[in-house]
Image: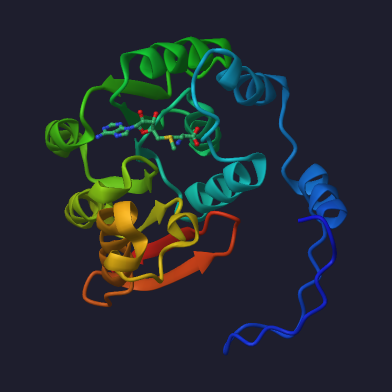
Length: 234
Ligand SMILES: C[S@@+](CC[C@H](N)C(=O)[O-])C[C@H]1O[C@@H](n2cnc3c(N)ncnc32)[C@H](O)[C@@H]1O
């Protein structure tokens, strides 16, 4: 965000001002979401190792830290590991004896994640499961219930991962989904979204389920650049 936006929002329900500038956001990040060397190294090295730079950022990592602690999570699941950046944020927020099960389809990503997790000294708190999340999640039922679930993988399967979370996250536990704005296309019709139509439909279903009070007592969107949706299990 290059310049300070002073326009009043015309979106009903949003506050009156938009004060976020790049300098202000950097100031806040340095103040409340500092990365240590291990985290910074993972984030900066990931693209150098040939992986896409699609990890969350430090501010989003700090949000995960907050949410994990807010629900006093001990047993957590993450769908979509990449190089383990978000995994390390989540695991560090868990108490001693806590465990994060993180799921990754790509062997190269899973291997780098294991190396990064070891380098960060978190191997006793994180298990990397390699393979298709839809398959691995079934095998993780027996290690539940879970307190926290972070969904950050293939968008078309978000509704499927959420259904699993509804069955396996305890009451008062928290479910989080990243990229919930679907790269700015969330509000489009599937037809208008063209190739992204299936992902748009999936994310719309995901969000409407998160907002369904039969399953969740509260759902909200953290307006990060990508949109981070979160909900508390009923
Ligand atoms: C956005 S990245 C995850 C970023 C990570 N959470 C972070 O912030 O550091 C998504 C990851 O999900 C993985 N993925 C995609 N489809 C998957 C599936 N069906 N099962 C497991 N992992 C999958 C991709 O290979 C990729 O590494």
